[in-house]
Image (cartoon, rainbow, N blue to C red; front, side, top):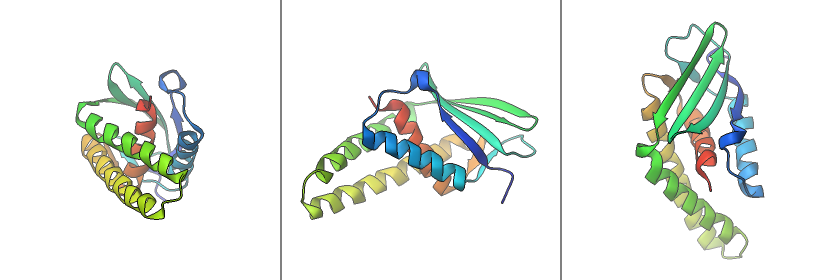
Length: 153
């Protein structure tokens, strides 16, 4: 396993909105999955492993990274991500609502849309991190889940 990996992820509790049971579960699963398998390589670092704290500060997404002989914070403007995050949150809300019902075809259709938006958000986040932090697609997907957790009201 590469030493360019995350071994700890924290969501800043002071910027984290209250969450439903479903959202809290998604956060825990995303963090667990990220710690289990990820590719995370901050520019300028000789190697990890790394600890990451995600927070929202003044409309910016902040990646606070620490590792052996490495500490850096990257702030990203949320403007390019806002529409995708809003659309993803809306479709997730619809998905959770439909899960309470029994219409399987509706669940499948919404889930396909949800996955598509999730992939779009992951690719957008990956491009926003370009030159700062190199991540693979699956790492970007799980990070996008956590980013939406910071903006879910």
